[in-house]
Length: 378
Image (cartoon, rainbow, N blue to C red; front, top):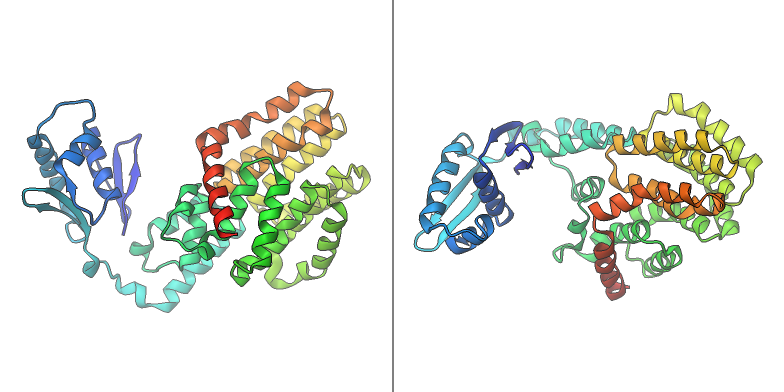
């Protein structure tokens, strides 16, 4: 079980039920939760919740008392224990947290199928709702899905945790490094090193082989990109590759656009537009509209390009798949300028989404920390 915090509303939720807290109660609970199972001294709590103020130990005790009253409905799940003469410790009651539904394999299988369906359709918010209510619904996600969901919601610092092995987090670190900084050559170098050292689990190794095609395109290794795409030409129609088809066609479109093969690009735009009504997958649709916008820029169709790009970014935001939104913004930030060299103001405007994301997710600091880990392990 875990709390879900809503800072703006001053609310906390667990198992589909929420309570409202006063600002200091909220801050106190959040601090205790972040340090679950750890002793939090009164001094630590005072410094965390009342910085630059001069409350007494009694202030902490009073707020703990009020928190306990409000958390009483969840007493079978969570408690705040007094450590005499020292402070307080939050603990979760693991013995009471076993939902009998969790032993039903059919229930678990049905929710995993539902999660996969949400994933296919690009419904990131629905995936998070499902994940946040695992206990209530009676199932548990496997570790690899839990990691994936952290990436989807943009909790990127999670993958810098020392308790995760490099094998567990390598795929995410490599992707993040690629997405959040401009040096495609360096990103490709790291991925090729990881591939040579076989640090990725088999599933992620295959996924990376498919996605590295975009890096070949970005670094103008157009022949390598075409060869890689040709290897997937027949495989993409296999039943278990359904979720990759539109991504495959988007890669073909991006290659055509950056090669300035306008006839081929137009062909792929028409093909994808015919498929979208029967394949309404938000991630693929959003990226398609962004890439189509890049092509329209190259055709000097600025009004149509604006419309396509704005819609594409909106669709990616709606999907709540943070990495895909970042990649869409990356394409605009680094690949719109060469297509409209004489319209630098337009290119600058398309970089605004990137700058906003960079500030929100601290790209500069994140890139530095990821690079340190990649250099160490590779």
